[in-house]
Image (tube, rainbow, N blue to C red; front, side, top):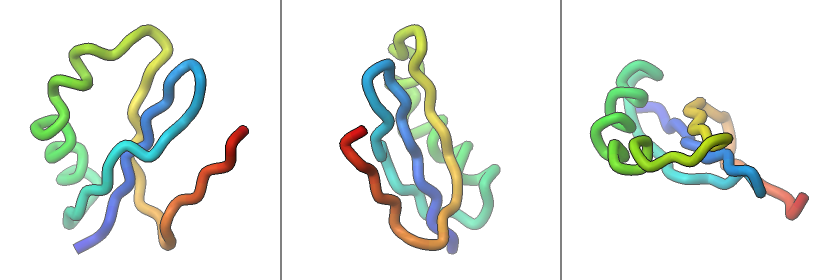
Amino acid sequence: MNRYYVVRRTKEKDEEFAVIDALSLDEANAIFEVRYKDFKETMQKGEAFFIFQANEPLTFDEN
């Protein structure tokens, strides 16, 4: 099982949105589509979600 991070980009900032355990990136995308369908449907202009695998936990700075 691999750990995939979902980052939500808004006009103001990027933030960690979710962590999904899956066997592949395709499976992580499918899980995201099912679990967070409501969020995708209500996205504002300029918002996006990115899903990727990282070797260590994500860190964000205030900028």
